[in-house]
Image (cartoon, rainbow, N blue to C red; front, top):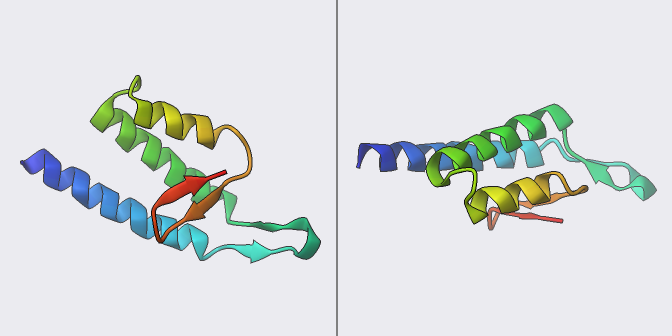
Length: 85
């Protein structure tokens, strides 16, 4: 039970960080938009770490997040918590 509370707390922290990352979004006109790369990398690394600890490196959750993370431009929908390409 104690571990579940820790995981839930980390998920809440990561959700807050995702909103903070989204808050750094800047529009570059015809060139699109971008978020602060350092903050994004920190958030994504923390997500990967949590997914690996909770589900394992062979889990579909970890593999799918890794696949999306390394596949190019991304869009984070903080309302739903989805990471979209």
